[in-house]
Length: 378
Image 1 (tube, rainbow, N blue to C red):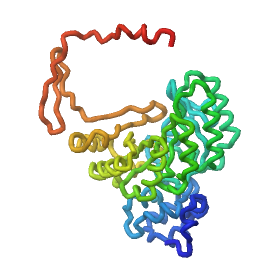
Image 2 (cartoon, rainbow, N blue to C red):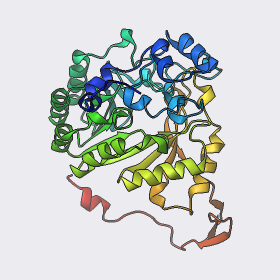
Image 3 (cartoon, one colour):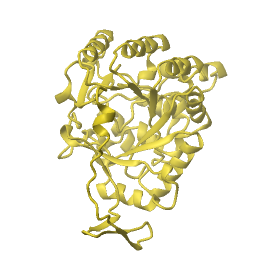
Image 4 (cartoon, rainbow, N blue to C red):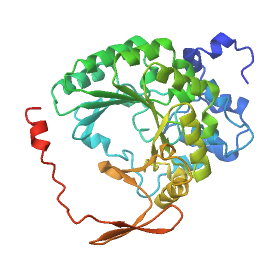
């Protein structure tokens, strides 16, 4: 696909980033585009960047318009339209942004935006108002301000570093950021959200893994959406982190006609577990502008979970999450297994549709007498 490229170049993550395909003319050299895709590239050019690493481009089926990698990286015409109910800031993050790089929606945790660039600009991006937009540049000053803000807010115990993609920071700069956050005495846990293992897995090397391990407890949360993305290179990137003591979890996004059935979701999560990556969330698509063509009905996600439950291990079944529009926060959904709550019993149906009754205890006091003793003075 890329004639003349050496093995050393292909395995260099910086080469991958520099050689990303960014224009319609470049894209047409490698993919037989449909009219819908050509119009999509042209009409979204001023809305949201196009960039596809050579590695991720190599996963695209150049002849099938519904290839899941293709649909996630090449825009179609519908992306230029804004449908009723869609929002520029679908999660209400800007309403809870006390500093440029801080989003504080939940009592004990914050989102820290470390930069505004990505290896691949995913067409389902919920933060497209920030990511890759020149007028919203997140620089070193903004990140320094964010760390200072953390020092002043002792209620924060959990920091999720995102962006953009934090793994695009040079290793030393990422180490410096993690060191600064670790110096905040009340921060107990750090998470890093990244799609690099999916789109540019060459970035995950020994030096990066050692830096992340140094700052434990630290969790990497990645973003595989389809089994086609779990290649030997992507799997090795995840396993390198895990072998160094860095847990890796996956958050997938449910996308219509890309991964919107139980067969694909089950296969995806089985392959993740084979590489010791824990399926964590299956996200309902956020109501970001231009994404209605990718959204599923809420019921579709519930049906997928129901078709998985009982037929595979619980480890392979993620939480189905909806991040409520305009800043309502996440809620999780599951099939209605509890059918009736009665005084003496609760009536359930199991995964086969059979009815079972759970006898309720006569005693209902659920207070914990040792609670005050244990937590006194902590």
